[in-house]
Length: 590
Image 1 (cartoon, rainbow, N blue to C red):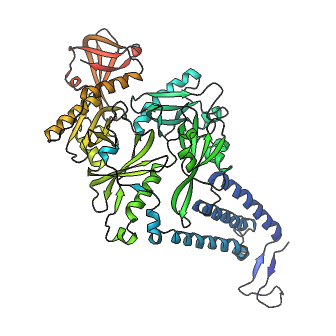
Image 2 (spheres, rainbow, N blue to C red):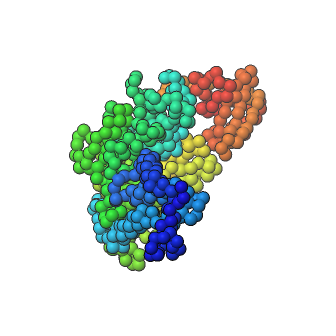
């Protein structure tokens, strides 16, 4: 069947018109259009399944989804009309695309207007009021003196290094080598201890196929004080079936999206209640200024990670309900810092934030977490707009209630403190964790752990906030604190700290939750020494006469090892449980 030529030239429809408005209509044009529409519906459904946009005009993801559907329709129309092979059909495709393209243009205009009416240029004062910041409290009176039995010493990288060591425990349930540790960690207070949580993840797609029917057997809890990592397996018959590491129908956000199609969600947060039952907290966001501005939290959908059961709560219910006191965070640290920056930049108007900059304050790079009154607070330093080398204070923001307190303290930025601490141990090439802020007898003090290349904590450091030249390190917290007190005295700053009390507190904490290690000693004459550089660390391997094993130790952990020679007599301490290994990591070599 020949294509139909439609004439819009006004020449009487004799098919001979050759005006610019004439175009060729493919044969069976109606059927081709129907195929394009059906294909668009199918393609749109597939796009929705994977993109998971909220059907909410306050989300730019919605507009991207609509644009994708329009693009699918035009592409299918182009293909079904054979315009790719017969250019003479291109005007037909262009004509039939006018309405979808007009809709796209309208959406572009709506988005443009939305950004304008949401602009901080016009709404600076409204942005500055999105969070209430209390500036009336003092650091010394409001922040309790450091409880050294409960000071967290790990960051995410250190927690992951310890968590990976728990994977061997999966052998007890016949799941060894099937799972790995998820990279997403959450910090909460669990039974009055700061801990980091993460779920397991499937090792690869084949291991997912093998295990997804049941699900993930548990999660990992890393105690940030004792540095003990524990793989928590769920009761028999129970598995984490809904997770961010799952796929298809068990993928957490797909499971939630299909029940709440209009909600705008933040990144899910993994938490456990006081009984250790796992849940996902899917924070519901709202745009409170114009169409796209002023992101804030209006509620949370709590998902039982085992059953998938979902319950939605408002912010007020989370704040006031005793049953929900186990929840430590519905506000992400990124959102809280963003809101504080609005407050700090724009409380005196937009023009002032650019030109005069009177009173303009912004958060420094990086955040950490502090436990206070059984809640978790996001911490960040605050600097003035004109001086990015020092802080003028810091802010604590409650991740459950959004209560924010600013404390005026002048001193070094966190990165400067990290550099100072690393400079004290530069020979070891240790890296400092992002600091947490402690009150040590009224002195604002940065506390950091110093990690080796394996992300294992080797030493501790304290840096005075007001004078970052006051730096102390130690292999234990008590030793570090004693050095810190002595260094402050040398700088004419006297503080009242009971070192014995700190030592007792830290020792009791370390022993309370630490697995028992039985050390065995071996004395002998060195008959072989070998060295290797692993991840930038010099590792010495020592063999004793008549033993047949090698004992390994890093030079950074035992400086004396570098001067040992064959024929020297040494005493090696090592874990008795590893006595049968060919290569044994030594606890000490003397």
